[in-house]
Length: 168
Image (cartoon, rainbow, N blue to C red; front, side, top):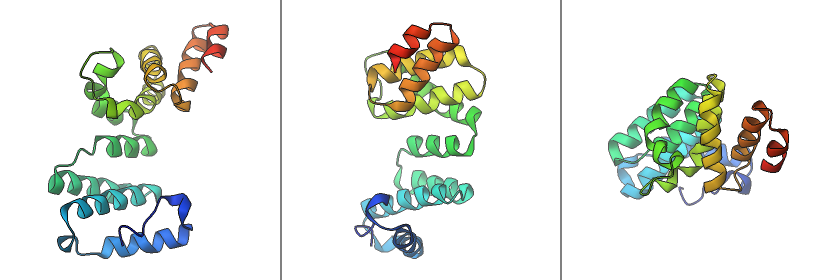
């Protein structure tokens, strides 16, 4: 069942929903640990897509507890979808600090969270702090659209329109 669940674009929404419902009903104790972890990740993502944020958070708690999985990225994306920006900032600020400051040993797997962090800072009115976050995002992942737009916005707010246009 887990292998039958490809990315969203490869199955119709109805087929994917039916597979996810069957996945949620499974007895995870019958699965291998890596299958159970993947099942929980899929259930959490599905709940977030359905805007069932309570179930998504509960599933992430279970995933972290039962599999000692790092749920930081999933939790940050969930908080972003919910518009809970202050909590997102609190969650990712310390882990992303090394990336923003360009320190050696930074957790490069967290680069995709930089644009979300920048957006959250802007949403909370911390525009000056968002600029360096977007700058790090563009330097570390030049293809990140949200990072590029945020970087251009930070130049625009500073009155540097030519730099803003070049950033795009």
